[in-house]
Length: 398
Ligand SMILES: NC(=O)c1ccc[n+]([C@@H]2O[C@H](COP(=O)([O-])OP(=O)(O)OC[C@H]3O[C@@H](n4cnc5c(N)ncnc54)[C@H](O)[C@@H]3O)[C@@H](O)[C@H]2O)c1
Ligand SMILES: [Zn+2]
Ligand SMILES: [Zn+2]
Image 1 (cartoon, rainbow, N blue to C red):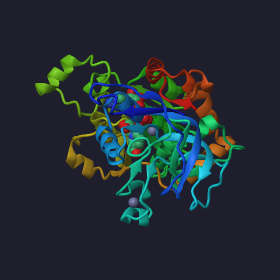
Image 2: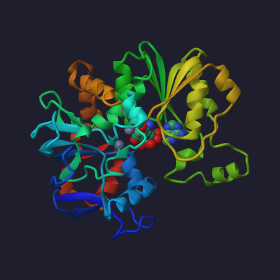
Image 3: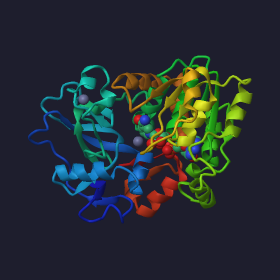
Image 4: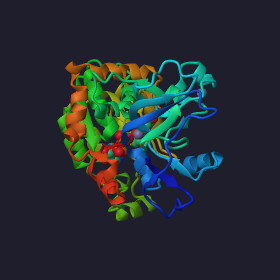
C-alpha cells in the first residue's frame, strides 16, 4: 500500500525535508492487537503540525525516539484521518467492520490520574498518532480502537468528516467560556481559528474581531463572517518566520531597542475603539507568538477571559505582571480535545444543517474541493510543498 513516511535509515533529519511516498505491506492484526482496528483510510488532513515535520522544525525527538523504541526505521505520518473499519481485534466491542470513523489523535493510557478523573486530554502517558505511533497518511492504518469515533455518513460528507480532529480543538477552546452575547477577539486566523469563528458564532458570540498579519487569512476571515478584521502590519520578528525580511528589526532587538514579545499598541487601540474603551469580553490566542499573547491580554476587559491555545517551544514573557493580575483576568490553557465531550459537540455542530457549519467548511475552508484535495496518486514533494504554501487547509485522498 501507499504511505507517507519519514524513514531515518534513508534520510538524516537535519538535512532532509518532506515526506517519502513508499510502498509498504498493508497492516494486519496479529498477536497483541486484540484492542486494535484496521482502517481503510479515505481522507487525511494536513495541518501546521505536519508542516513542522515537513520542514523538520518540530517533533524530532518524539519521532526519532519512538521509532527507535519500536525497532523500526520509519514513522507512518498523519494524525487527522477518517475512513472505514476493515478489521477489528477480538476485544473490540462497540465498533463493527464497515463502520465509518474519524480518529482522536491522542492515544491515552486510561490508567493515569487524569485519565481516571475526566481529563484524558492531558494523559501523562499520551502518544500521538503519526508522531509517536504510526498514523493515517496511508491507504490502511492500524490504530487502537479507543481512538475511533463513529460518523453517520448520511449526515456528513467525507471531506468534512476528516476535519473532526482539528475542528474539535476549536470546540474545546470555545467551550471553556460562555460566549453567548459576548464580544470576542481572535488573535491569528489560521485553520483552527477559522473553525473557532464558526463555532463562536454558533454559540452566540455577538461581535467577533479577528487580528491577523496574512492577507489570505484575512480574506478567509471575511468569508467566514468575522465582524471586524485588523491587519497586523507593524514590524515584529514573529511575523517574519518565513520571509525573514525583518533582519534590521532583529538586530534592533539584539540591541535592546525593541521587544519582540511586546503587545502592539496600535492593535490594542483599535480594539478599544471598537469596544468603547472597555476591551473585549474574551480573547483567544490562536497563533502561538509571544506578542500575540500580550495582545490578547492587553485587549481583554478587566475581569475578562483569555484563552491560550497557540503553541511555541521555549519561554514567553508576560508584560506588566501587576496589571495582568489586578485586571482580574481568568486565563485558560487548552490542550487537545476533551474525550469525548468535545466530540459530542462537534457531532451536533456538523450534523445540524441550520448552522451552516459543515457547509462553510466545505465551500469556504476547502473551497468546494478546488485545489484543496490531493489524490495520493498525484503526490510529489513539489506538489505537496506547493499546496502547503497555497492553502491554509488541505486534505489527502487515499
Ligand atoms: N493547544 C493545542 O492543543 C493545539 C493543537 C493544535 C495546534 N495548536 C497550535 O495552535 C496554533 C494555530 O494552529 P493552526 O494550525 O490553526 O494555524 P497556523 O499556526 O497555521 O496559523 C497561525 C495564524 O496566525 C497568524 N500569525 C502569525 N503571527 C501572528 C501574530 N504575531 N499575531 C497574530 N497572528 C499571527 C498566521 O498568519 C496564521 O494565519 C499553532 O500555534 C499551533 O501550534 C495547538
Ligand atoms: Zn493537526
Ligand atoms: Zn492517562
